[in-house]
Image (cartoon, rainbow, N blue to C red; front, side, top):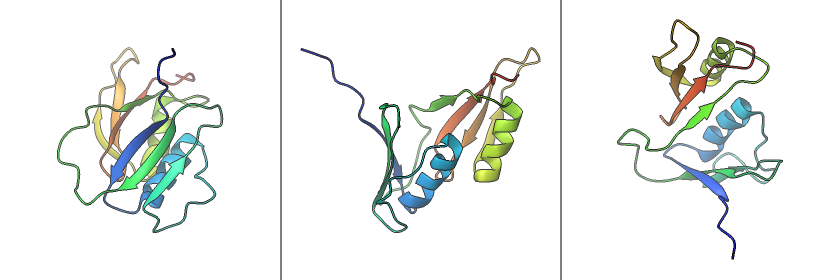
Length: 125
């Protein structure tokens, strides 16, 4: 017997799943599924390397508490500061900057639906 694999990581959203999917598509550099269109009840980003998919699903209720799970992103080919600026330009919101004087730490952001994620030190820092 083998253990289960994570197939999808699902994001609930009250807005258009396509719009939230576009944010993450741009941030992660992975395309939305060709079948996804604005107004669809869900949108999907597949991992070309076979990892977990990101699934965005419309739900009626809004987010009411802090995420119990979130992504920690490590920029590749750019600094943490450049990645944070890029995320903000895509529509993220700055929640807290926990960068330490030694360059460690992270920056806490939220996507357009309020889902928190962190940006850690990049490989160019």
